[in-house]
Length: 208
Image (tube, rainbow, N blue to C red; front, side):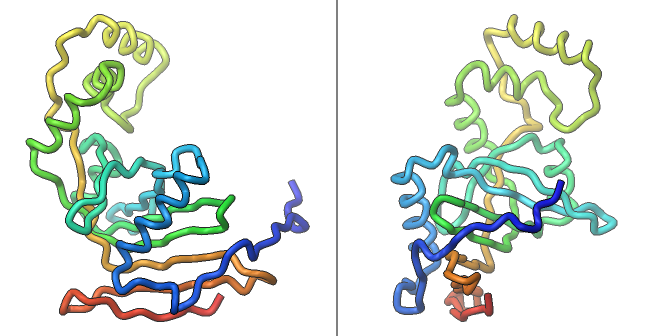
């Protein structure tokens, strides 16, 4: 497959220092609302990257469920690969990408488990099919086809589904934001916020 001549034109929008609020959380919220208004499917989808003990990174897409107290919230199986890696190294990378808006946001964050009560409350609010899957499945564990069929059959029989203590949420405390807006001739706008010790942000531009 030869992709070297594949090109996209950028320059739909621009981003300048004068456009930036003091807090990156305000701009993040605005861009999420813009993505929702643009009717982007799963506009709250974000890539989470973790790393194992050898330093090998691993990425996957999860759904942002909330922003509270300047933290991102998502849920997963704590026994999954990402859960195990977060427990060993809570430093993660986060990326949102909305091609139709020619925008992406890169972040560096620290992940911590949310209180159990919050995970329980959210679990019980999910559709029963989602609760069944979370209870039956041990995410990221190896499984053969027959075991998958058996798990599906067992899940269909569940009516009273207890909260599995291996499942729950993570808060992401973001230390660094990069807001990327595609620009003409690949001269993209890259505006960054870096958290300082006094909880204010240093704002600067990166070369495209």
